[in-house]
Amino acid sequence: MGRDLVTLLATEGCAVAACDLSASALDETRVQATAAAPTGTRVTTHICDITDEAAVGRFRDEVLDQHHTDKVNLLFNNAGIFGAGSFLADDRAAWERVFNVCWLGVYNICRAFVPLVVASDEGHVINTASINALRAVHGPGAPSTSYSAGKWAVRGFTEALIEDFRTHAPHVGVSLVMPGGVGTGIRANSQQILRSSSDGTVTSGTEHLRTYLTGMGVPVQDSSDETLNHLMDVMQSDVFAMPSVQAAGDILTGVRENRWRIFVGVGATELDQAVRANPENIYDADGPSLINRDLLISMMVLSSRFEPEPEGSADGVYELRLDSSPIFCRVEDGKLQLSRQSDGPTDAVIEADPAAFRGLILKQERLNDLVREGRLRLSGNGDHVEQLLRAVAV
Image 1 (cartoon, rainbow, N blue to C red):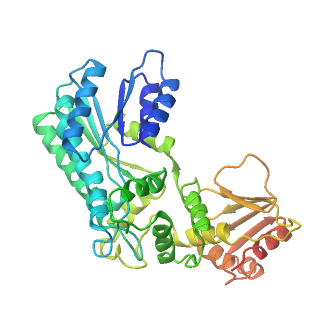
Image 2: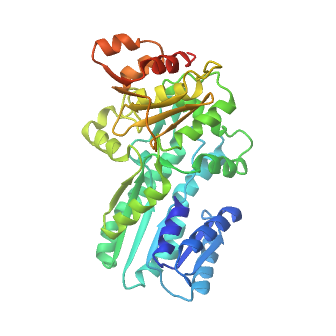
Image 3: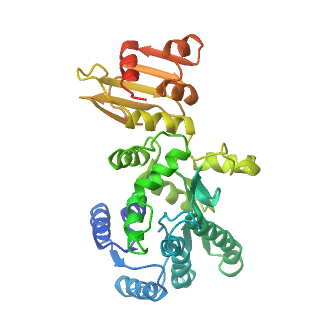
């Protein structure tokens, strides 16, 4: 999401300075942003550990020197990693690394750069928290103490800045970004960073996902790392996540409109509404979640347990109308792919409540019974649908 913010800002002709720990990631960002920007737009990149105040000071000095300026108009704090979710069971160094990136990084950057924003004639500070600053848990059996604590700190600090700026710098705006499901590389990036911060006891990304999915009711206890890596890709796809470039665009729209709360990504607004409607039950096992549990279970099982017959009788495109927008299930040469996008005709359309479809995928319900009871509507090639269902090994 940070890379797309840099690119969109550069496309508008903004001079942009970006920092990261990864030189290769910064190189990719600079190339992408420069290619999209008007000729002459300055895009600089800087390696910086934002948890190190001295390093942040050097980063600030580099920006002022390379951009020949003494002020900044827009300050985006978008960095974040997660992992080491348990205060009781996880490695302390990794726990503190997550917390420090999520919170101390924002604090250090603001200490160094907010005076430069205040020095401008018009400025805005944009801090990215998370929907974990609404509900401080990933899911049943998947605690999120370090990440959530850091993001709650970002939320509280940013909301407190509203009155602080209004009183002492009324020409500066502030926005709190609350992402839900956004397709980013945060899982993989987090693991790389945490491995260098711990004593070797950090839970891997696949094991973290296994814990989360198991808690949500997805049968992956015995799944291989290869299967879990595939499911991680599905989780970051448009089935469950907003493309990062769309999220970045929504953030910039919110800044232009001077909104202090900017919700982006799948499920963010809905979770906010659910928490406000019934705050007492948000930590119950059946409390609100970012992703509909029935939809998650059915898509994860469909993705991980698909074992088609050799003759490919399940090949086709199936349109699944289970929530606000269709999911297209494409089967070709024995491979199954899920996407919210399709550029061709479909062989069958299935319309059902997510709970009914979950029962169908888990073989707890029969297709004909659901159709007869009016809980599922089917059009197109029914035989193809039967072949698809038979290919799911549950």
